[in-house]
Length: 383
Ligand code: FNR
Image (tube, rainbow, N blue to C red; front, side, top):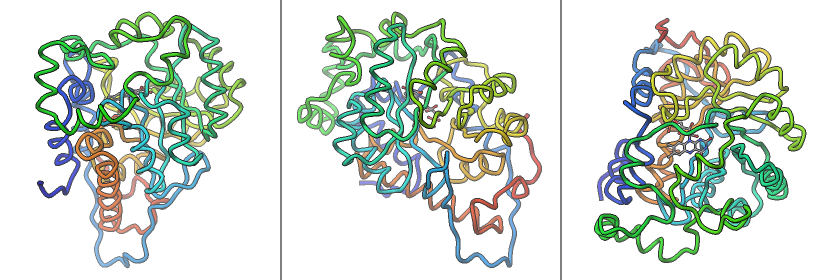
């Protein structure tokens, strides 16, 4: 067993342990993957100002996101098919987040259902991410199910009315459960831990959807189903309707543009997430960290600004906070931990990020995350 000291170690282990179809689903972006790569690479363009002989004790990374206490400004991003990276993946990631004192966001496209996660975490509040589909009755029922499960925020994703093309998913024939082609069977035989886990759980389909949508008892290809069900006509008036139906804390995910950020403020939402869906939708869009400062400057005094995309270390979290993010989210950093070592892997990923954040903050001469501002950076801007 290798010694794990960073997120890249977890990624390499996940690559060995997770069947290719699902590993590729996580570790890919759309088309040329240029935005996917830029999300991570653009963090390197920002340099820290090191300070010395500053009292570095005591230190705290505690803060709030939408008024809720968090042990650090990091939440788990919603990711579809998480229960295919590891058996019962959403339940395990939710438990690890609860232990770490940070929010867990469950995707509409999860394998474990809203009710499964609520039961397994003893009613501990988590966040639910909503995709808007053509079947509005289904959306209403999903919102009601999230309320009944004690979810403490709704994350409404606005950047997936249509699906970006990811070459690998098409080539691998991504589906849940995986189709038993010869290629898939041969590949899965090299992943015995994963297979054992899957044989031991009944959760192998889209738990929020299969059995809850008229006529959907099983699902074929994810791409085909998404193309048929996701609503390309989504508009700001739908946001209004969802906000009223939900009635609780609302976070709008997928904002990339200042004009859209202003429109988002107008909906009365509690926060926006500057995000390009982890480089999985519009390839050629700017990295999230480069889009963040302008949006934070424009609307940061009127709405909480969060960001995600490319975060693989606590240093990335610190840079995002310095540029105006009140909170951040990790998608792949969590998935790699989960695929590598299940619940323990997610705990390790979160602890790695927490420690890197804490130490880097101290090196910059700050002891409280709430006091971090652009002054910790050397003035480099990524745009
Ligand atoms: C996602 N993302 C996503 N977002 C969302 O709102 N609903 C979803 O179901 C999914 N599904 C999903 C699957 C996978 C495998 C990935 C990698 C991402 C986007 C996600 O919430 C987040 O925006 C990005 O993952 C952030 O980038 P990093 O942290 O993965 O670089």
